[in-house]
Amino acid sequence: MKTETGKTMREANPVKKAGRIALISCGPKTRSHFSGVGPLAPPGVTVDIEALEIYSDSLYTIENRKPQILGRIKDLVAEHQWDGIMLVAAPTEVLNPGLLADLKAALDIPVTTALDACVAALGAYRARRVLLLTPFDARLNALIVAHLEMLGVSAVAPSPFELLGDAIKLTPDQVFDHTKKALAEVGPVDAIYFQGAVLDPLKILDRIESELKTTVIASNPAMIWCILSRLGHHDHSIANFGKLLREWPALA
Image 1 (cartoon, rainbow, N blue to C red):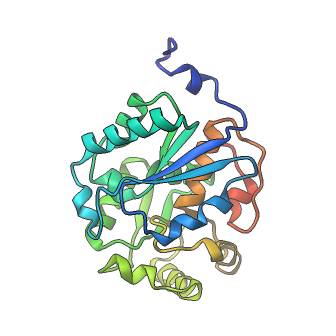
Image 2 (tube, rainbow, N blue to C red):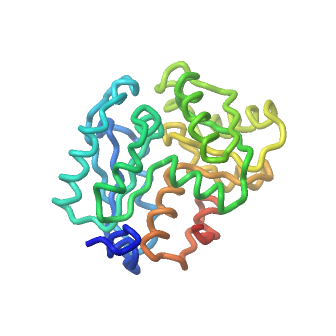
């Protein structure tokens, strides 16, 4: 049911301590980084993983698939009765303009995407110029940079990958070295923004922030923080995954 402001009753009165949320990907089930999402959630919160398998090897096959994405997600929400959902992958959003707004209009539960959550997290730390690190190619990076610019975030993305698989192969130490090199190239920034968990920084978030003296926003932690904050979770502190989950700042 809608309120006078247009929000659903569940959005206007968030559920405190929601127990079940979903991480939804339009890609395949085989992405190794999905296994790292569970530890990011606080006790009592279950994270279901759903892969729609609309694309496989090429991220570009998700382009202009908005009706299919919306239909599949609406069916899953009706089936599972989740408290909130997170849609991963910035390419899904930038290749389907208006997707987030359409999801919010179609569902009566809180929704976030990788881009939506990370922009909110950057806002919590007043970060306006960021180093953008992704596992994507130059074209996708340019689309993400343009999307961020519309939302008030200036991003520089100096280190594209030709193939998604090249980023998956990096060890945590190699991800750290990649980050340090890119940071030296772009000069002063307010934060480092990891978009795309295939370039996985989770094991070294604290190290990057400590040794490189900066704030790191990564897509999976940001989505956990954002969706749970919208569901009324305001008092968590989760260690070992960077300052965002450790400090749990208020969501504007």
